[in-house]
Length: 473
Image 1 (spheres, rainbow, N blue to C red):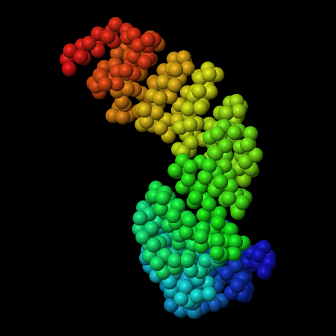
Image 2: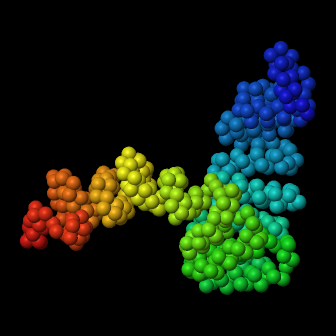
Image 3: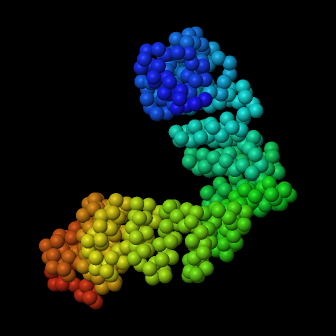
């Protein structure tokens, strides 16, 4: 069917006030096109003409439901789809529209019951229906229903398919039900003891629970069962098995074993980025930069946009002495919590050594969005700058920390350190104020005050205040 020609014909006939005959398929196509382009006025005109041509046709309710849903009139859409459901023979389009509306209304349990009816009506489509259900519920974070749909779809999965496995285990994680997941899998193991997918699921959840010995035992059983199967049909599961094993070994500090597991993942799935990341980290940990480089290049080629790959690239460049390019990458990582701390630390070192005050303050401002109430972190960065004999930049960090940290989160250590730097740079009144605030929090961290002065020799006003404090307490 000529889509462009059909649209042109309908619009021309409507303008001329002479709409002619259209097949039902043509009207559905027109409606779909106008809804996708969000032209609700023309969509309504299509429906009006459909009503004229096919008055009494049950499928009209389905089309009216589409339009009502596009207008976000959920109750009206529900009324129409219920009518269509009553009048029409079982139809996948009706089921899926009904499900979409129920999910948008937040009626997840009703949607799940309808899915069961959908599968009963079309048992040959069970796998596709449960995959559709998982995506539908996952989009609204209805993890309980994702879990149930994954269990229902599990028996229908293809030999190489890992979708239901992943969605089931991640649903348990997001629900905070790792222990319940382990219990459910053990119950399934009693019924199907030779299903390696169940043992892999146990290994995955044990790893999440930090029960590494149990995870290894489950992995050993999964490997034994996988070895008895045709390897060509189980490559995805072998890759998954070694992926979990690598994570367990890394958590246990068994770097050589983790490295070998990552190599096996690459053997089965050469384009898996997590395995490349594990191999690169192994080489970086041993400072074998040249051996890491080809793997890093491949990771950048496959997933250069991922923060974890950018962080590894930045670390590699930093170690190789290419600080300018590393700094550019680190600045792009400031908004990612997992990598921001290292990025800030390296950028502060680089920019203070360049004496680039403007860029230094810009990084401090960006870092404050992520580390707004972390006085311990700001104190550490300031002391690091001070240890490099960059007193002015240490002051910038301490002053910025005092400005962005809420008063109730400021520690005595930060106040004492700020007082010492302020005095050294000639800010006497601010130094005395910070010293007073530090003393109000207790003198136990006054050691940070002495660190700010050569050989720990305090100025006389500070010595006087500390003696007075000791007399009073």
